[in-house]
Amino acid sequence: MVEQQRFAPTPTPETQHFWDGCRLGELRLQRCEACGHIRFPPQAFCPRCGSEATEVVAASGRGRLASYVIANRPLPGWHAPYVIALVALDEGPRLLTNLVDCEPRAAALPVGMPVEVRFEERSDSVSVPVFAPVEPDAEPDAEPGAELDADQATPPFVVDDRPLPEVAPPRPRNRGAVAIVGAAETTELGTIPSLTPLGLHTDAARNALADAGLTAADIDGVACAGVSPLEVAFRLGITPTWVDGTAVGGCSFMLHVRHAVAAIEAGLATTVLITHGESGRSGVGGPPGRRRNELMEQFELPYGVAGPPTLFTLPALAWMHRYGITEEQLASVAVAQRAWASRQPRALRRDLLTVDEVLDSPMIAWPFRRHMCCLVTDGGGALVLRAAERASDHPAPPVYIWGTGEGIDAPMVSQMADLTSSRAFRVAGRRALAEAGISTDEVDHLMAYDAFAHTPCYALEALGFTGPGESAAFVAEGHTAPGGSLPMNTNGGGLSYTHTGMYGMFAIQESVRQLRGTSAAQVDGVDISVAHGVGGMFAASGTLVLGRSRP
Ligand code: ZN
Image (cartoon, rainbow, N blue to C red):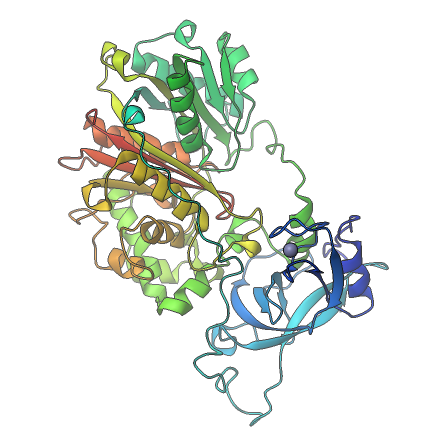
């Protein structure tokens, strides 16, 4: 029986054929008549070849379970636990959906399990596709999935295997041409009921300007996300000649740095202020304004998803399955980062953790427990950037920007090109390292955005610090913890330090502190630090290679 509160999607002209099909019990996909590519979600032309020649075909309704979480938190209209799944259709596309008519426990739901479509009525005019396990032909008592052979047990995890863009040759002129000359966080971190998001932006901005020995009158470029750069500029009394409001989620600040380097190099601005502030915990000033995401509303929200804990986590099981990664290894990420946080007086969570304590913490969405999920806090941070020639005019040692990269994948996690490796991370990371002209061996310190325990692991692999599937073991063996070969997330990360919603600014701040030698958990001999960020649910990425000296 379907409950009234469950979300009913609203068809759009481009998707009407899909929803008409669902009403009639048919899963309809679009096939390009020019190149044969079968596409999802629906759109008027082929994303591969551009052709508008399209036929609508009835899909078999069969597919295989590619990944899932077992949602375990109350949500109106839903009875936890329930399964939010990614299904790889036999025709190629991947859908986010629910698994129904099954026991919501991991042992009963092997990755690779054959599933078939059902339709669940949500309103008088809309039904949504859900999936159920295909009844095994063999012995009815057999454990589900027991009959899968090795090939079947590895479903397609990739929906887009087009080659990555070529990495442009490094431009030596740009290496280290711009420096961070001011960096600071908000005066308080954690719970700040007295400041709106804009107030947090300007608190951080004033701290960063003081750190740089500058005033607002020195600034002619402003970049920020969450609020508009015109609000920040107005409040601080700045008349900028260059603004950047790029907002692609938590890594937006890495992109602002990249864009600011280009702007300063091009003479569009001389001194750029980048700000961040969010009232993620207190919600002062109301929830942040979000543009409607028409695809997510139709193809993800109907399935009981409740924000990042059930969306960002969805690909992880595919990655764990493919490489044999254990829940204990995943838990070790939270353990290693808490060890760093224990040395950071400003970290929200500082008590040391064990793997067992992580695994015993409340289940959020299997396999993710509370300690594997980021904090929700208030706070902000800001940076001031200037050409390297002027970088020594400031009180604190400059931090030089050696290389930067940016990349995007899909606006819905269900459509990420490869569930087991972030395409956006690979594009951004490779570009930044190539621009800097360095290999991973030369990196002394890494900040890898950790919205959840698996996200820094995806970064370690995409940037080449470990091979594919080796990152979780690398962390579990202690290589990223205090005393390890690659100190990572030394502020404690989003899991233990702070996480306002868009955490990337805090990753950059800790890279700057380590390069200046001022971190509370200072690592010896940090000459090169990488700050790598994610935006949305693996939707976007930005990478910065930062150096203590000018290359
Ligand atoms: Zn085509």
